[in-house]
Length: 208
Image 1 (tube, rainbow, N blue to C red):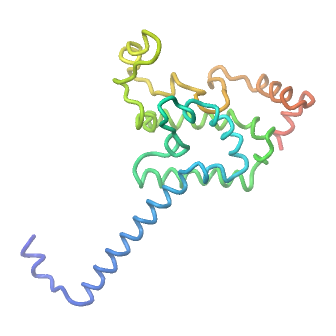
Image 2: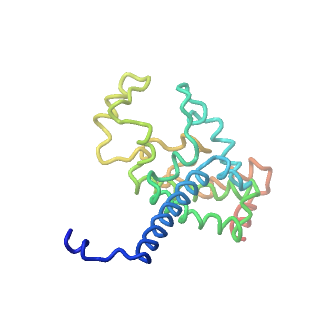
Image 3: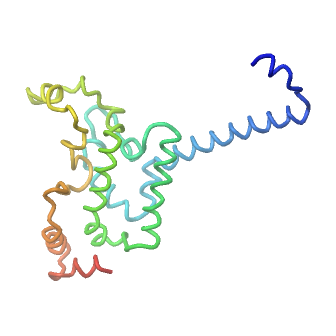
């Protein structure tokens, strides 16, 4: 290999191409890193009005107000680690932007609440598919003690084949029942009562 490389003449055009390629690669990686950093911030995530409803619940949660003072932000939980995995998550998130621009009026709190279960189920599925990898950025299974006497034993003995999200739902945002027990009609009636709507309004709004 060394003899092969030494046989290649390093002409001026080749040298220029290598320099330009190297600088271009550095610029591209810098762009990806900054893109990931900015699009993972709470400020970016809540720049859509519809996401401020999610933020309200988040600010009440232990992830925002932990006794340790270590605050988890949107990207810490919802964006994979590593610049390429994170970029891919942001690209996939483009479908949510498309829905925001051309779908239902998610800026309406009623519409947002009616569609919340679908978003929760999709997010929980993502956590299962990634084996709750973002949770494990902060939480080390072997180090979990908890306040109850059996917490450590449960995490040692009853977590085989499970993802964090299988046991820990509804920690940050508005509680949504598990998909197995969720009843759409009951949820619709609850939202109608919460916002003072006539019975049947939820179904009409969802059909739009």
